[in-house]
Image (cartoon, each protein chain N blue to C red):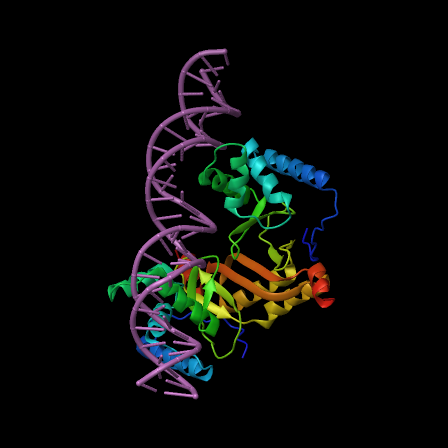
Length: 164
Length: 164
DNA sequence: CAGCATTATGTTATATTATAACATAACAGA
DNA sequence: TCTGTTATGTTATAATATAACATAATGCTG
């Protein structure tokens, strides 16, 4: 289940379908885990999924407020639920959230984020985790969790820059 | 200059001297770079160095306020200077700061932080960076910078746990 | 299907982390 | 010593996140 190749989602895919599939998968996952994928959680998940880019909690809040009143805890609770269910990840260096691309496979992942267009790709590379584990083990450190966020230029933006 | 081994600073070292040496090194580094290691910057650097643990900006602020008035920008400006000089690092997942152990060698580093005692160790492991570079290169991603923070149990706390 | 415990959401207030904008002071070089 | 530059002081506020308590929805159990 480990993905070793970065996949940046481009603008020209069938987003309607992509979105629908993601929600179906999320629903099924919650069902399996005996958790409720409520309307609010679905809405927040959709917003995180929508742009295939990191989104801030208050950006989500603004969207919710278009439908009526909403306050920060509403957003943060939904985000906490989605984080715990493994449906989204938090990007610590951006204080932002991204949708998980393989929620069925519980993992922490490594994130590659474009500083130009903010596109992101998620990886669960054994190459990287093994390197970390090895360094840790050599010193007697017991790894519990990790935060790995790589910033740079996605292939598209890199080419644009080179041709400029 | 790459350190491949984690070193957690234990409580039983000559802290007076450790502190003095660190400040001397910081002074020299600034001198070399034509930057001013002012009293305020020295004070903030000392506070970050002091406990060999991540420290928050407002924790530093409280210390400064013991000497008289002080406001957040004072702290953040000093921290920004120290970050840019490579004398400290920021731990994104903790919103906290740690002293750099090898400021003469400009690097981003990987951080191993104990969830029990908060001791930290800094690494600049080519094993890890190479793994990341390789994953990136395969996909055409150009790495600019990274955030790597590993949480877990330091050797001491791990042993304590096992014997409990 | 009524009652009840549990889980989820609403609401208000506030904590925590960080920056903007402008004023003053200290310093370094001419 | 003057002057431009760099550093710090000060006030206000932005951005991110949580605490505490009230209400509502859900689903289990009898």
